[in-house]
Amino acid sequence: MSEAGKRVVARSVLEGSERTAPAGATDAGPADPAARTSVTIVVRPRTPLPVDAAPDTRAPLAREQFAALYGAAPEDVRAVERFALDCGLLVLEANLARRSVVVEGTSADVAAAFEADLRRFESPAGSFRGRVGELTIPTELAPVVLGVFGLDERPQARAHIRPAATSAVSYPPPAVAAAYGFPASATGAGQTIALIELGGGFVQADLDAYFANLDLTPPTVASVGVDGGTNAPAGDPNSADGEVMLDIEVAGSIAPGATIVCYFAPNTDQGFLDAITTAVHDTTNKPTIVSISWGGPESTWTAQALSNFDAAFAAAGMLGVTVLVAAGDNGSSDGLSDGLAHVDFPASSPNVLACGGTRLTANGSSISSETVWNDGSGGGATGGGISDVFPVPVWQQNAGVPPSANAGAHVGRGVPDVSGDADPETGYAIRVDGSDIVVGGTSAVAPLWAALIARLNEAAQAPLGFINPRLYASPASLRDITSGNNGAYAAGPGWDACTGLGSPDGAKLAALLVPPSTGS
Picture 1 (cartoon, rainbow, N blue to C red):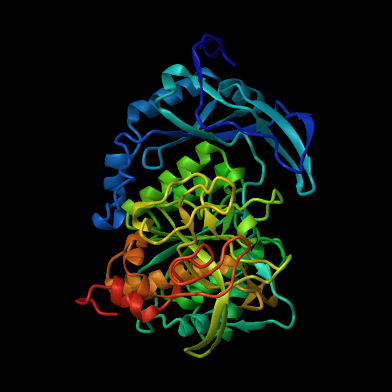
Picture 2: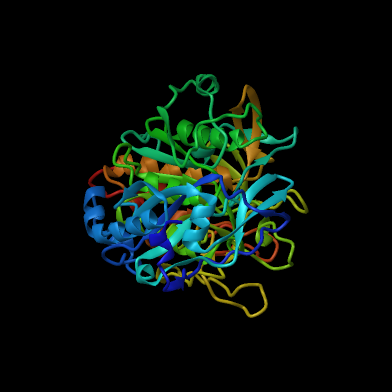
């Protein structure tokens, strides 16, 4: 660190930055001090985001308008840049709309800049740099800096995809859309669906073959690299390639008129957040929909991550961007073994449409049965439950959300909001790395709903944006799922913590969300 950096004496703890040692990993000693790394510093908005208002009551802002009203103030960015330079760090990028300043330096320099304890951890999944404890920043920057990401590189999320048994019933995605009555007159033309991907990649030849088999013209698929992430297929259907191809093939076959853009980023909290903010504020591709099939238990996130992700989703709603997030594939425990109920994040953010899973039996447009997806011990089940972090949103207060199943009966945001076919035994036929396979998981439900929103956006001739308040005001617009459970929670009439308000009824949703003058 430079002499100027050493003169900074007054420091404050960065609220919400505390990290514990990663579960299942071994501390292998201090991190390599000479390794270079980038850090994303999130700055406050110049005007507080009106997150308490229902975004669907306001006209969407253009991205340029949003940046001018709610982006970072230039003087705040300059103050952060001066701090970084004083600490011997290189400023790589400053983005006012994303409220992000990206800096780079050696691990030793970034550790000193934030008084971080950087460690090297070994886990069955590999070696990575992590940290324990809190971060600090100069006291004069305490009101300015809302988060610092990138010092810890532990894998933050998992893909919510499940392979099927060889005897599984499978549907091509358009058949699922037909069963749910998606409006047939729209293809998603004029819409851009952003897919957030934290690994893997796609092969165009596989997409060409898949869509040719469905007698569809392949949609336009592009990729955007974030924080060094790239379209990097591993060549293994069991890798993250499966998630990427599932997302593209479900969204692209149901909304073939839409453009699909994959935002590839590392699987860290920094990469995940930067991918989301890059997509939301992308003035080139201008997504109208963001689909996210990755997540992890709320308890595995820092408080600064929870708040900054949620703010990014609130911004999306103000821009008229609909965000769909998979609710998880490990039932009410969300894969943790502490005997407690947990919900998955970012599905638990009150500024997204959280997507749970069902088991669907259908023939054409006829649905013979639909129940909660729960394949029993080890087989996967839809996520869902009560948030330990976020309060019940105003639009969910009349939905009958129960207290948490955990001791203390905490009252919080209920997850999911909606649902769709996710059981791998009634799964989706896709193509990955040259293989035709059947998969399920709530990973499929997010792009399923993304494709539906793309069709409805086209029919409405405008982006629908944040639709949660309208759905909860008109629950009869969805197919209520009343049978089954995900462990701690059971389905029943009305909203439940397994399937939310239910699965889509395309005709009723079009009548609810598309203005009569535009038609569907």
